[in-house]
Structure formats: structure tokens, C-alpha cells
Length: 113
Image (cartoon, rainbow, N blue to C red):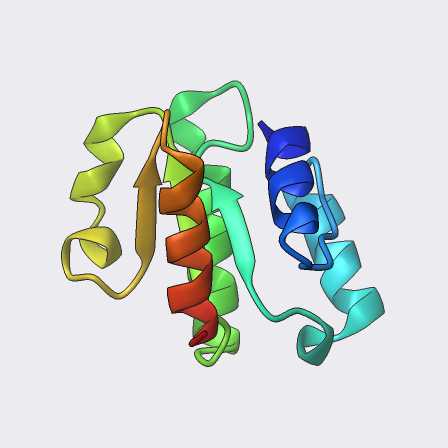
């Protein structure tokens, strides 16, 4: 999924940096600074343990520290649509599988374009 997102977004002219884990995401943010990141797209579940919701915890942490940073959550688990921030619309959410156009629309909206 990560490679597909990179390919699709790169073809649209976006610069994409990936992270395979919460630790890599945090390292990237430390290296670039939050000003070097315009949008976070993360799967709710970044680990094989579904209950962990590591991506969701990452999104919550970054949102608390950087409320101006747009975030899009993705997940193949429809129960994640019931997460409080998804329900109230404060975090964008895409249910997998989603259409490429839905992804691009969400990215444009998140970036205000």
C-alpha cells in the first residue's frame, strides 16, 4: 500500500517521504522538522497487533503538538470510522480499499488546494 501511495502521489507532483514504523516517522520529523512535513498520511494500524492502533496514536500525538499539520488516517478496518476524531470530522479518514481519486481529493482538501 505504501508503495502505491508513493507512486500515485509522486505522479501528481507531490514529494513523498515514507516511514515503515512510528519510530521512522518520528526520526523523519526530527530530521526535517515539522515545517518540512506538509501532510501526514498514516494507517491506523502500523503494527500487526490490530489493537495497538500505533498510527492512530502517532496521529493524535502529532496533532496535539502540531495542530496545523493536516492528517489523513487510512484503514481497512471499518470499525475505525468510529474513532472520535474521525466521527467528529477533525481527522480525515479513508477506508481501504479506496479509489485513487478519493485519495487525491482527500490530499487536495487537506492541503487546501
